[in-house]
Length: 145
Image (cartoon, rainbow, N blue to C red; front, side):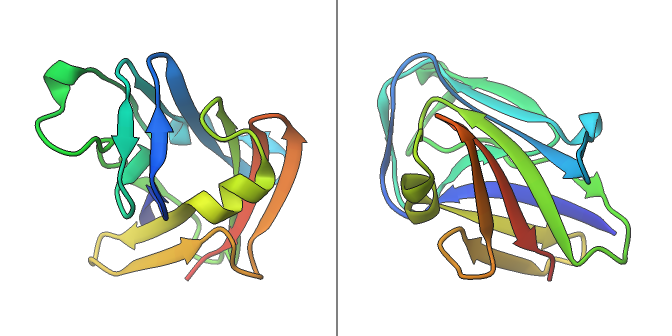
């Protein structure tokens, strides 16, 4: 199954030059390198609610020259997953959100398939697990459709 994983804002998030959001899927305790995503902001501004903060499977840097309207990250690249997965975990490293409570309140994960079906999972849902590794480093586990 091919899926696209986009990290979206649930409320306004401020970014300043040098802020970044990195994410990579985990298979058990093993990192899956093809899934790594990094978004770096070279500008100051606010990402409005329901806009993409970051994506998986690619690396992008954003400056004023790249942004014509509201600040929003580029879409993710599709990731091939086994069909029998019931959940997926991501290792997140960021200097934008440092606290697990703020992460849960601020973001949702959109999971889209090639057929066009999209599921939005707010990180403050009861079936989402957030393991706080250190300031700005989390393991987020979400159910798969």
